[in-house]
Length: 476
Image 1 (spheres, one colour):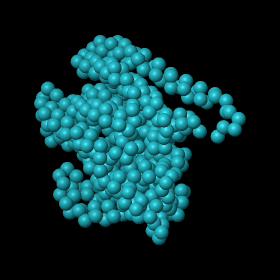
Image 2 (tube, one colour):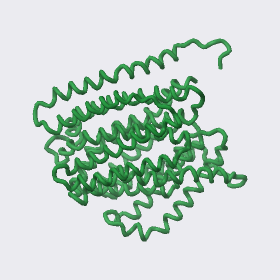
Image 3 (tube, helix red, strand yellow):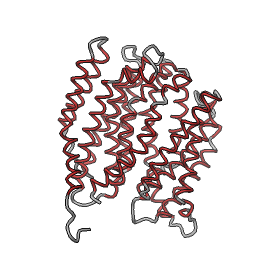
Image 4 (cartoon, one colour):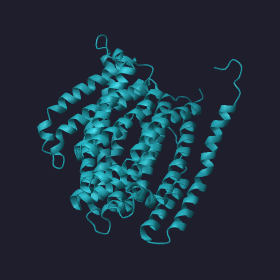
C-alpha cells in the first residue's frame, strides 16, 4: 500500500475509535461540573495527574519500547511482549515497596490506594494496547477505545450520580475501565501465547530497557511542564482557581484529540519508513499537520467563550470564567503537538537521550516562569498558561534544529511565525475586549484558514492522485 494511503487509512481507523471516545469524554464536562465543586474537580485532577506521573516510572517506559520494538521485524513479537510483561511486573513490585512514602505526599495522601490501583490497571492496559498497535491490529485498537469510554461514562454515572462517591468515584471509573480494557484485549487478541519465558531472548528485553530508561525521566519532566503549574496555582492562588484552570485545559484537548489520532497512525509509518524519499515524506506530512493544527487552534480561540458556556451550562455558572485561560493553553497545545511530532523523529533514530535533554530544558523554562508569573497579580492563572506555551516553544525550536541530523525537515519557519502571530493577536483581542471582539476574531480566524488552506488542499490532492493512479502490470 502507498505510504500516504496507508497513513490516511490508519488515521481514519484511529479516528473512529479515538474521536468518538474523546468526544464523549468532552461532553461529560457538564456532568462533572454539575456533580463536583471547583475544589473537588481540582483535587480529582491532581490525583489523576499524580498517578499519570508514576505510570511511566513503574512500567519502566514500556509503552515506548513496545511500539518501537514491536514494529521492528528484526525482533520476535513474543520476546517483545514477554519483555514488556517482565518490566511492568518488576516495576510495580518495586513501586509497592514505596507505599509508605507515597502515603505522606500532601494533597493526595487520602487517595493512596486509588493511585496504586490506577497505576496498575493503566500499566496493564498500556502494555496490551501498545502491543496490539505493534501487531498492526488497528481496528481492534480503535474498537477498544470506543468500548473503554463507554465503560468510563457508565461508571461515572453510577459512581458520581447514583452512589455519590465524589472524587473516589471519579478516579474509580477510570480504574475499572482500564482493567476491563486490558482483560478484553488480552483475551480477544490471544496475548497469552506471546508470553514465553522459556526460550526468551533476554537481550531484547535489555535493549528495550536501555531504550526506555532515558524516556522515564523524559516523561517526568513532561509531567512537570504539563502539570506542575496546577500544583502551583493551587499553592499560590487557591484550589478553586485550579479547578477553573483544570476545566480550561479540557478545551484544548480537542486539538490533542486530532493530534493523538494522527500520532498513533504516524508512529506506525515513521518507524517503518526508510529510503531516500524519507525526508520529503516527513516534510510533506509535517507541513500538512502544521496547517491543520493551526487552523483548528484558531477556531477554538474564536469559539472558546460559547464552548465554555455550553460545557458549564451557561455563563452564570461558577466555572464560566475558565474561558479566559483557554486561548494561551490552545497555543501551548499547538506547540505541544509539534514537539510530539519531532519526538517521533528522535524515536526513529533511537535518540532517547536527545529526547530527555530537550524535555529537561522545557521543564526548566516552565518551572522558572511559573514561579515568576503565577504569584504576580498581573498574570495569575494565565501566567501558568503562558509559561506552558513558552516551554513548548523553546523545546520546539531546539528540536526542529537538532532533528535535522536524522531527518532534514523542511518546516517553513516564516509561515509558522505568521500563524503564531495571528493566534497571539486573537488571544490579545479576546482577553482585552469586553465588547466588539467577534468581528476582528472572525476576520483573524479566516486569515488563518486562508493561510493554511492551500497546504491542506495540496495534501488531499496528493492522496487522491495516488489513489487514482493506475496499477502498472507486474507492480507489487
